[in-house]
Length: 128
Image 1: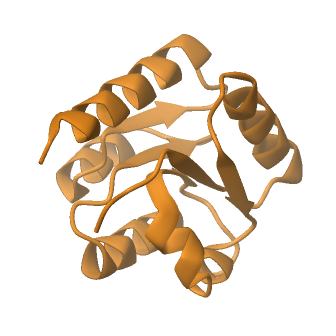
Image 2: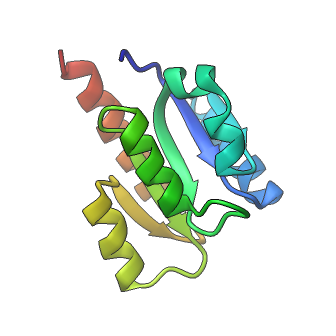
Protein backbone atom coordinates (compact mmCIF):
# COMPACT_ATOMS: atom_id res chain seq x y z
CA UNK A 1 0.00 0.00 0.00
CA UNK A 2 1.42 3.38 -1.06
CA UNK A 3 1.13 5.89 1.76
CA UNK A 4 0.49 9.62 1.35
CA UNK A 5 1.73 12.34 3.66
CA UNK A 6 -1.61 12.50 5.53
CA UNK A 7 -1.37 12.33 9.31
CA UNK A 8 -4.35 10.90 11.17
CA UNK A 9 -5.04 12.15 14.71
CA UNK A 10 -7.28 10.06 16.97
CA UNK A 11 -8.16 11.67 20.30
CA UNK A 12 -11.52 11.97 22.05
CA UNK A 13 -10.59 15.39 23.46
CA UNK A 14 -11.73 17.98 20.91
CA UNK A 15 -9.18 20.58 22.07
CA UNK A 16 -6.28 18.13 21.66
CA UNK A 17 -7.53 17.04 18.21
CA UNK A 18 -7.89 20.63 17.12
CA UNK A 19 -4.54 21.76 18.52
CA UNK A 20 -2.65 18.85 16.95
CA UNK A 21 -4.30 19.15 13.54
CA UNK A 22 -3.80 22.94 13.46
CA UNK A 23 -0.18 22.55 14.44
CA UNK A 24 0.46 19.84 11.84
CA UNK A 25 -1.32 21.84 9.13
CA UNK A 26 0.77 24.91 10.00
CA UNK A 27 3.83 22.79 9.13
CA UNK A 28 2.30 21.79 5.79
CA UNK A 29 0.94 18.34 6.64
CA UNK A 30 -2.46 17.17 5.47
CA UNK A 31 -4.47 15.85 8.40
CA UNK A 32 -7.65 14.06 9.32
CA UNK A 33 -8.95 13.87 12.87
CA UNK A 34 -11.20 11.30 14.52
CA UNK A 35 -12.90 11.25 17.90
CA UNK A 36 -12.82 7.47 18.23
CA UNK A 37 -11.13 4.33 16.97
CA UNK A 38 -14.44 3.13 15.61
CA UNK A 39 -14.87 6.30 13.51
CA UNK A 40 -11.43 5.82 11.97
CA UNK A 41 -11.90 2.12 11.31
CA UNK A 42 -15.14 2.89 9.48
CA UNK A 43 -13.35 5.22 7.04
CA UNK A 44 -11.55 3.07 4.44
CA UNK A 45 -10.31 6.14 2.52
CA UNK A 46 -8.61 7.54 5.62
CA UNK A 47 -6.91 4.21 6.28
CA UNK A 48 -5.67 4.06 2.67
CA UNK A 49 -4.35 7.63 2.72
CA UNK A 50 -2.66 7.54 6.12
CA UNK A 51 1.06 8.09 6.32
CA UNK A 52 1.15 8.19 10.11
CA UNK A 53 -1.22 7.82 13.06
CA UNK A 54 -1.13 9.83 16.29
CA UNK A 55 -3.26 7.84 18.73
CA UNK A 56 -4.36 8.72 22.25
CA UNK A 57 -4.39 5.73 24.61
CA UNK A 58 -7.56 6.62 26.49
CA UNK A 59 -10.38 6.78 23.96
CA UNK A 60 -14.07 6.20 24.50
CA UNK A 61 -14.91 2.71 23.26
CA UNK A 62 -11.88 0.90 21.81
CA UNK A 63 -8.64 2.02 23.47
CA UNK A 64 -5.72 3.48 21.57
CA UNK A 65 -3.72 0.29 22.10
CA UNK A 66 -6.60 -1.82 20.78
CA UNK A 67 -6.83 0.50 17.78
CA UNK A 68 -3.12 0.20 17.06
CA UNK A 69 -3.35 -3.62 17.23
CA UNK A 70 -6.26 -3.48 14.76
CA UNK A 71 -4.26 -1.22 12.44
CA UNK A 72 -1.42 -3.76 12.57
CA UNK A 73 -3.91 -6.43 11.48
CA UNK A 74 -5.24 -4.31 8.61
CA UNK A 75 -2.15 -2.46 7.37
CA UNK A 76 1.45 -3.41 6.78
CA UNK A 77 3.62 -1.81 9.49
CA UNK A 78 1.40 1.17 10.31
CA UNK A 79 3.52 4.02 11.67
CA UNK A 80 2.00 5.19 14.92
CA UNK A 81 2.86 7.57 17.71
CA UNK A 82 0.98 6.77 20.91
CA UNK A 83 0.15 9.66 23.25
CA UNK A 84 -1.30 9.78 26.76
CA UNK A 85 -1.99 12.26 29.51
CA UNK A 86 -1.58 9.52 32.11
CA UNK A 87 1.27 7.52 30.65
CA UNK A 88 3.86 5.61 32.63
CA UNK A 89 6.87 3.45 31.81
CA UNK A 90 4.68 0.35 31.41
CA UNK A 91 2.66 2.11 28.70
CA UNK A 92 5.86 3.28 27.03
CA UNK A 93 7.25 -0.25 26.83
CA UNK A 94 3.92 -1.67 25.73
CA UNK A 95 3.64 0.88 22.91
CA UNK A 96 7.19 0.23 21.72
CA UNK A 97 6.71 -3.55 21.90
CA UNK A 98 3.56 -3.20 19.76
CA UNK A 99 5.68 -1.44 17.15
CA UNK A 100 4.85 2.21 17.78
CA UNK A 101 7.42 4.75 16.64
CA UNK A 102 7.19 6.54 19.97
CA UNK A 103 5.20 6.98 23.14
CA UNK A 104 4.75 10.59 24.20
CA UNK A 105 3.23 11.99 27.36
CA UNK A 106 0.95 15.02 27.25
CA UNK A 107 1.69 17.85 27.12
CA UNK A 108 3.50 16.80 23.98
CA UNK A 109 6.96 18.17 23.25
CA UNK A 110 6.25 19.57 19.79
CA UNK A 111 9.89 19.57 18.66
CA UNK A 112 10.23 15.87 19.52
CA UNK A 113 6.90 15.11 17.81
CA UNK A 114 8.04 16.81 14.60
CA UNK A 115 11.39 15.00 14.77
CA UNK A 116 9.54 11.65 14.87
CA UNK A 117 7.23 12.66 12.03
CA UNK A 118 10.01 13.96 9.76
CA UNK A 119 12.16 10.91 10.42
CA UNK A 120 9.34 8.46 9.62
CA UNK A 121 8.06 10.27 6.54
CA UNK A 122 11.52 10.72 5.06
CA UNK A 123 12.36 7.07 5.74
CA UNK A 124 9.16 6.00 3.97
CA UNK A 125 10.00 8.04 0.88
CA UNK A 126 13.37 6.26 0.69
CA UNK A 127 11.85 2.78 0.91
CA UNK A 128 10.90 1.05 -2.35
